[in-house]
Image (cartoon, rainbow, N blue to C red; front, side, top):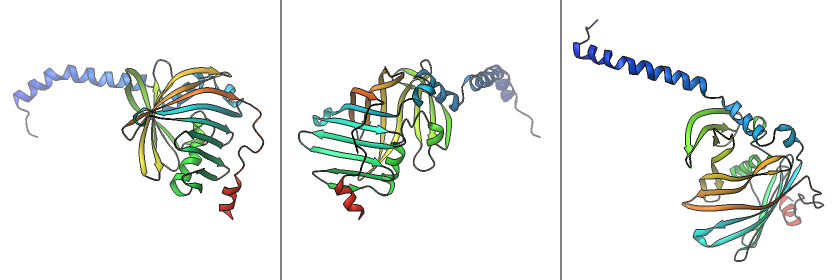
Length: 256
């Protein structure tokens, strides 16, 4: 075995206390950090608890989506219900009306520009995953794994970074505020006709609605632009319009 030089021995002696402190601090941080499961379960608890969520069967949301860079605003009305039924109307003075829906295993949309379309492939699979009612609350049913990636700062707020990985599709990076337990930011990749697009969503303006806390404003960053999704009203456990999730006739015709 080669002998250490006197200079190297001296460096080790000097550095040893700092190395010990760093190691002990690292162990302390590892012990202090909660598991991903505890972080996710805490989010459910601070936003109302599982009993309150279990009581919600459906939801109607009225909102707007503003894209300031293009000077455009879309008015959105969306109905959703367990387990994964969704119907949305999106309207804009310039583009007109677009309808989108998930009914059973059929993902569809139609507009003046495209006509009726039944989605397939990765777009369909992504929409089916995203349409799961309260996906982040019932995360054990929607994701294969949940892992704590570490710590991060989001808009000056200390957060835990949890990575949720579904059985198929891309993982989601979710940032939960350490102090409040609320979900602050979600990073995803969305599948579109233009390809895969990274999306950052910042959730703000949490309000209590029927016993649960919901975000009424989301700032979305994608394609170098900032978009604001602002909720006007939320109604839950309502009498849904008859056949609201039924496939439109022109979509049924595509199936034949």
